[in-house]
Image (cartoon, rainbow, N blue to C red; front, side, top):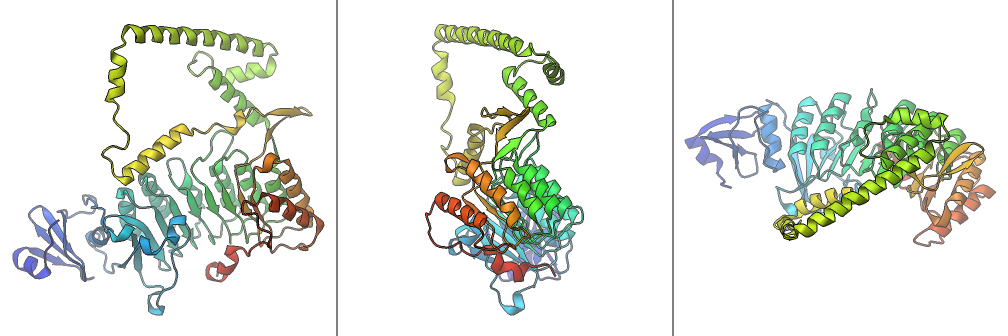
Length: 498
């Protein structure tokens, strides 16, 4: 890519100087963006924001897009290499140590993979309020990026319309895995849209966003319902919010059929014994409601007759509820379907024998998956293949279902490995429910870490001591020391509500 000095272009080409110091030069079909302190870079010429095509270099795309929107004060860019900072790869936090005069200046922090300007690993906004123009620019950059893995907004003043724009951009960025929205309360509680269907996020940090029970209801429904579930998100941080017992119940309901979430933090909220009990029970047994039983029968029907369209699922379920002879009929139908499948497979075998030369050709036409692809394409292809190979089955189809007192019971959630409820309002009365649920999880499956510090009960009370004994046996590190302090405790002063 050709580079030009500012003086050469000033002499030979048309020039427009932005108040921020960014200079745009048009040379035939090329637009040269000159950022103060950096060399000029050629990009396809365009004089409108919508026609601009991002090059993948945030150092030129960001100021170029801001200039096309006639922004007067364009935030400065600060870069660093990801090789020198491995902390952000875990979805954690970028370092907050900055000079006193740079703490809240509008600076866009850009993390580059090994210093390559065309491999943007992370973007962070720390402590300054963004407007719709900035979000519009970032959305365009995010949606066009093929390498962006993490993005963070700390007290950036985001609004619900801005969240909608970021959601649309995140769904178009297949590489984005980690997002942090800390200190950004929303009026319409649209935080749950960040891990909607189509999102590839695996780590979501929503600390200190003043999320209350209504927001928790939306988050719980986004985790799972009787008919849908999120299969991507593995880590969700909801600490330092305002979730009470009702909200904890909604989160517990969302965990009933979610089988992807591994880490959940609800520390420093307003959860009492009622909400803690609802959270505890989902780890032991799940008693199906009438709607969930109907949904289970629909799924069983679809599993037995995947190609059948003559029998409506709702009609079948209604008949199933009122007839005792339907299981035998369903068994006969399954036998007939198996016979038909056997006939089809036999015909396929005969056709393959008769036309044996074509089968090898088909195999030869399939290229190797990763041949001639770069590392990013390999990762994308692996993710797609992994999703196909690990096709999640609804927990409603769990074969370990059993009946008791006329109720249908399924095993509880054994996927969640870490739950933090530190700093809430939980007393000794709800601890036996946690102990009973932990004892129901067979073979050590389920929770590996349960954090209950800084709650109003004695640290030496009998239920808590028994919980600690059970968790000590499950600890994969086999530690014998006391529980370490919760990581959120040390950051409360920085992210507490003001």
